Length: 398
Image (cartoon, rainbow, N blue to C red; front, side):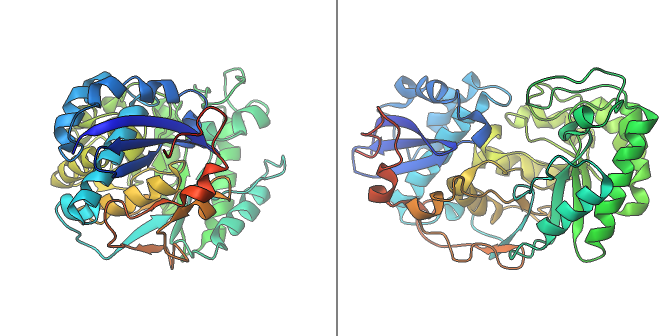
């Protein structure tokens, strides 16, 4: 079996790639929604490096391209290619990908809600956060815990006058960083306490906080949350679109609080997790298969973290339905340090009409049953999907 083509398109809000072979087997993968505007040429950069290779030799193909990736967002192209290769390998062998990764250790995988969020309609007060949290909790998936953005991972720096000592910055990708004011910190804690009260004892609360906090604020927040028993504080110091780790700064916080500290979604490759893990700089790591270098890379990091007593809660909020399928496959194989992965959804809604193989409902009581279909177990309804192809990509499925 040989790779004959690498194709890339945009379907709705996601970059999607297809690896075709001379035996008629195709593998598919999806990149995170935040990369839709620019990722396609980065994917196609690798085409000549993989054509003619046997896609079942996943690691051999990956050695040709892995060193040419980088931290989020640029590792996404390499990661997506890797997942499509596993899809082909599983289909060719007639087995689900989890069997090729060593077999499953659980029949259901736990997921949490960090992606199905609701507008606060411009409100920034604690009651607005409480009302929003109630909507997230009331979802039919009955999620066991939910994650909400706060501090520098929210509109607080722009909406709360005097939130920090820095000027409000325009644009996305979480540009704010610096020291919070007493006013800003008080507002932050009031919102957290309001959300925690809504959650009660039945639903856990995780908080996406940055990046951008200085160590004193990160430690102050962690200690203030100790009695609230939050699931974790995520990406306080580094995180989204930060091309470095700063494990020593995280360790200062983690070693001085009982609140669990989490990071990792932006990190590419196992080598860049070693400091976090070996120094026990955080309590939980959350690599994204669409950024770390793929599902085998994520599994390696999970195993190494388990050796050091660190928990695993993979990121996945924007990975789409093919990313969901890949996460189900790899998380079925992870050791007992696995907690849950962040549940991705189809966006726009018509994504649910153009793929087949997902259970209905997908999530029951915060868990997804692991399916046994070959490959990642999910593929396209080609006739339905074709009508959403952008101009110039009409031959994507040919």
